[in-house]
Length: 155
Image (cartoon, rainbow, N blue to C red):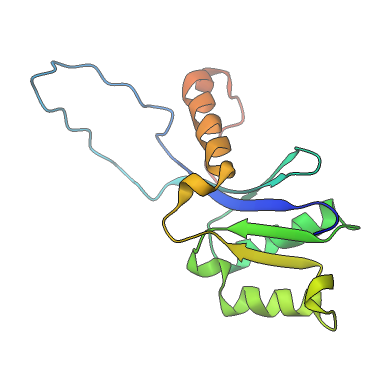
């Protein structure tokens, strides 16, 4: 595909991700209560294979509205390019709302000329997705340097 290709996926940073250490006797099971496992920050990200730039957008949650907003964001970042988004099988990635949006963007174009093409990874295959490694490095960085993060707030 000509132009810039994108690889998209979302990431959820669970509140408490930065608190990953606990000490105790190795012979005893330690239980850590989760106060609110629903508190999180959600991000969509795309790796531009052409420029090697990682584009990121915060959103309230992973859903159809956020997916459409992220695609719109990608279009503003790469207005002259055709975009291929390769992502997992999350239901909101291929919801009717997302399909309707893609149809409106690609309306009247032959498939080879679509502004946006979406391709799904095989089911349950995160190892196929290099963006998973980027999210892993970002979470590891936050855990290690959380004390330097002055703007890490709840949404």
